[in-house]
Image (tube, rainbow, N blue to C red; front, side):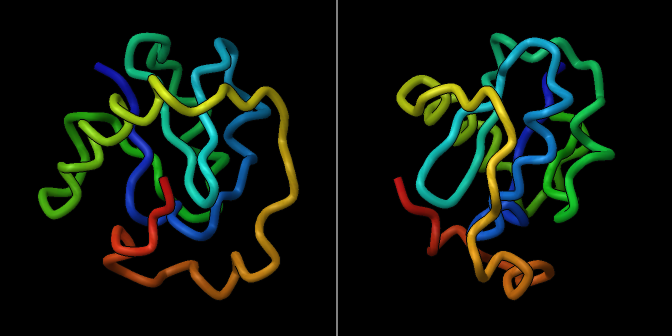
Length: 107
């Protein structure tokens, strides 16, 4: 099993999770992070660190967000690894709790 970054991360892109990842499995896009399912070791450390509560175990991804499983796998192959925490976008706090943000995901 792997962990998956879901809808709540779009336009928030807090990177607290990156600091605790022991295997550098996070990849960064313009306004979203993904987890490489081939690198994730299921340590769960990232889950508690995410202020947007965007990270789920693959088996626990909400039904309406299952498409993020494939999206994480796809984008982790083309986006660069992020190794350290960065400042979130200036309006990140405005996007916490907003639902159905897939339309805003920038590739």
